Image 1 (cartoon, helix red, strand yellow):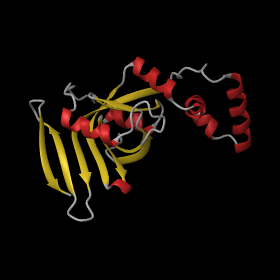
Image 2: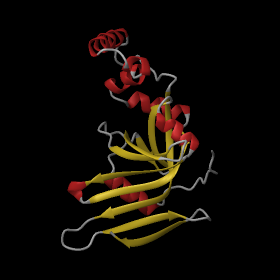
Image 3: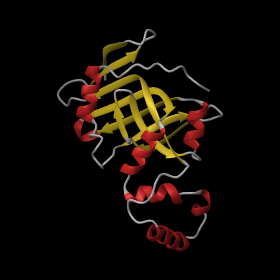
Image 4: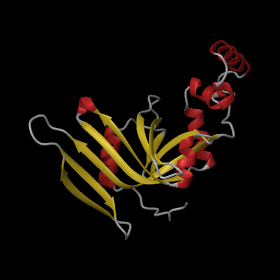
Length: 199
């Protein structure tokens, strides 16, 4: 299933909030988002994934091409995700359309992954999952020794998506007043409508 590309960029005001709430793209501590999809049978699913980075075009995530979420996105590219900061009384919720990222972006994201996650991208296979723990550890150690830090490139199964937003909702709590949501909705003419809603 495909959805026409909008090409609309995140509006300046919303992007300014995003840059204040999300860590900078060069921060190695990447945040976890809860990504919701619909599977090939129309059933909802969700999982936590790393938010690799973001820009005015959208939000980038990366995964294994053999995963269920890839099958979900290919069948139903309209997705949603949320990320919460309980201590700050903040939550971001995004609806959008997931599209395949460019090869250059995928390679760049892999290069920025931690050493562990780079190895995991190569070894986290269905066959590896079935091995006893001791055998997994031995094979992991052997693979790591054979591939010094900085020598690995992304495996063929590594891919990325950019989630192009169609709705951005910023929720803010207030212990001394009511919570509220500031919402940006992409309209049919590819402009953004902003509204303030109760929390």
